[in-house]
Image 1 (cartoon, rainbow, N blue to C red):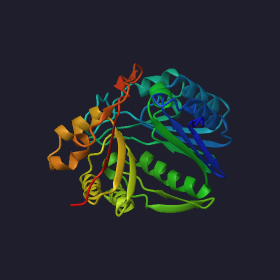
Image 2: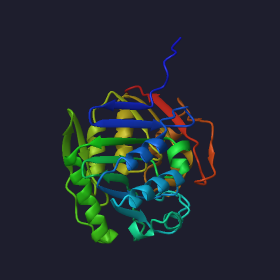
Image 3: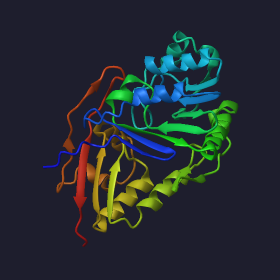
Image 4: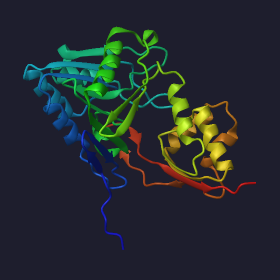
Length: 303
């Protein structure tokens, strides 16, 4: 019998990674880690965030501001989103939450333009350390959903994120200048940064390059709808690679309905040899979304 507890945190010099999943009983205490990260600010803190409504996080930001620390908060000010193939659900009340927390004087709303969201979720502390990851700063994002976040202590990486933050502050979504793709070594770990929409197909190309030729691949994604990545998965399946993954069935269903792509590219959603298995749903009252996922696996036979 294996009594080993699931790992929620991986740490080495300059790098920490946190995994949160209520469904899988992985409690990394993301909210506390984020509040502690904010509280550790000594001089400057820049925040770019899609959805911010968690009271503990808002309180931590207010404490930083009250200490006279330079705080800049950039948030997505687009209307409420209700999901679909290109939108992340949110109630559209981040601006109200920021104002109620007494942070309006430190905040800049970022307008939505032609469906382009400020979907970033990062902080730059003292020009030396970066927090980034998939979690919004909400109760759902930090405690109920499946998310991963990481902190990286690197002035070089912080400088890259600061360049992106400055570009976001200075330009509308359709006028962003490109922040070059950058590879940085942190304690021997190579970290590559790319930012959308400026990167264009660069991120897709990088993901496909990492997938190409794999004999074993594990994938976790809310949805997979990019044609190049779908084709790369299909090619690996045809080649007989050992594949398994987890996806959100609602998100994928939306993507599939709105897609004009070959239905065969969505093979993993209805593979008769390994049908998707619904996980236990967790309804998130704060976010009005569902935490339900489905898993798939396939080891195809080469023909």
